[in-house]
Image (cartoon, rainbow, N blue to C red; front, top):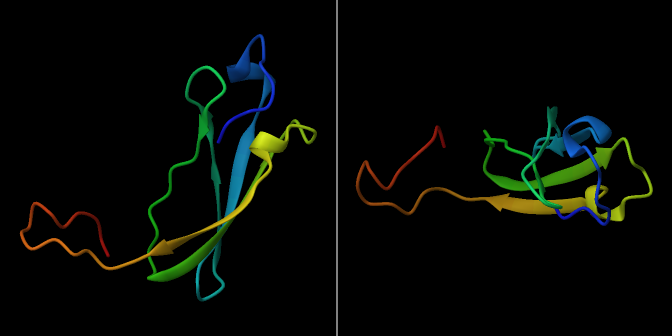
Length: 89
């Protein structure tokens, strides 16, 4: 995510979280982190195949860069060797 604002102390000034909804409707909340400059990241390993919904929020509600509604597709690995296949899915 790209913040629309610069903060003097981004580690202390902003808290970011994401609510992820699986294809079956299970929800998980994870916390994001500042990754330098105006970049913030959320890390999550999906445990279901299909389309996931992601809603991010921060302690800065007027920062539209950190308040997003996104989706992503989790697909099976297409790797052919054990080195190409990572993770539980």
